[in-house]
Each structure stands twice: as structure tokens, then as C-alpha cells.
Image 1 (cartoon, rainbow, N blue to C red):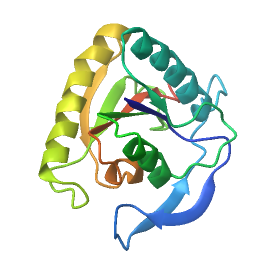
Image 2 (tube, rainbow, N blue to C red; image 1 turned 90 degrees about the vertical axis):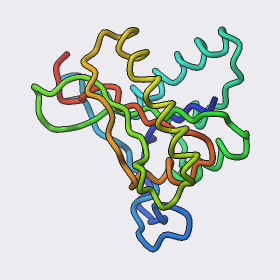
Image 3 (cartoon, rainbow, N blue to C red; image 1 turned 180 degrees about the vertical axis):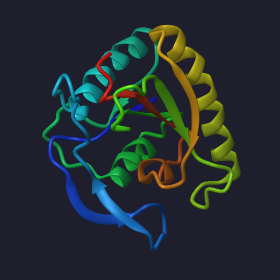
Image 4 (cartoon, one colour; image 1 turned 30 degrees about the vertical axis):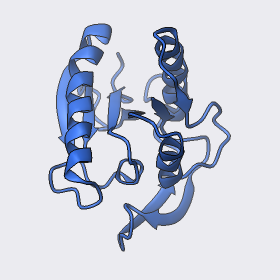
Length: 178
């Protein structure tokens, strides 16, 4: 299992395609958001959770590949997928925190490719959806957080370049006090 702790200390604002052979481009990686009340950086939260998840999965006997273990890295989103691909990962779990900018919004959701994703095979889309659907109740059970369901996205570079089933968990809202 490849764990991608989203973002990093500094953004890389140079551009890369959002998927293989795409003419549409966006920043290679952003530095994420910051908690309105905690002032903690999203990249820090993502990394802390990723390191805890790594321990749990290893304890359960899984082989784990970490995309990053530090904040001072420069790893583009396509490179993050490449790390999972080179490891022949069976799954890629991408950890993020959301920023709706509204303090009343709370809970988590899971991003998965839509059926119309032109960068992934139907089989990979189906397997990503299966992974995402498995994670929803598991995260809800372990965290007791508000389950906001699935979000279908085709613009996530790290997902579009992945050859492994991929789910991106938006673990909570950085502007919500809780």
C-alpha cells in the first residue's frame, strides 16, 4: 500500500499535465492550506496521519511505501503516483484536509475517479471506486466523523497518473474549529 501524505512545505508552482498526454496543466504541487484556529499546516497534518497509518498497516502485516516522510521535499503529484507505480502498489491512499472556507462545514469525504476519467482504464476506475467505498465506512467507524460520501474527480494529477487503485481522503475541514 502506498501512502501519499498530500502537499509539502513549499509549493512547486511549475506546471505539469493533469494526466498522461493531457494538454491541460496545473501546478505540480501546492503547499496546502492552514487551520483557521490551530494555524497548523495541512502538509503537517497529512504527514502525521500518514505516519500513524503506516504503523497500523505494518502491524497488520501490510507492506507500506511512503511517498514522503518529511515536509522539506519537492515531489510533484505525478511523481507521487510514479512512486506507487514503481513499487507495484496494490493500492494508493492519498491523505489530505479540505478547505471549504466555511467554519460550519465538517466531516470527511473520499475522492475517486469518475466513470468518464479519460486517463484511467475502466478496470482501474472500478477498483478505485471499490477502494473508496471500502474506506468510507472504515474511516467513519474509526473517527466517528461526519461521512460526506464520495466526490468524483478527474482533475487530480496524482490519481490520474496512478496505475494502482487510488482513493484520496479529505480527512476534515481546516476551517472547522473541531
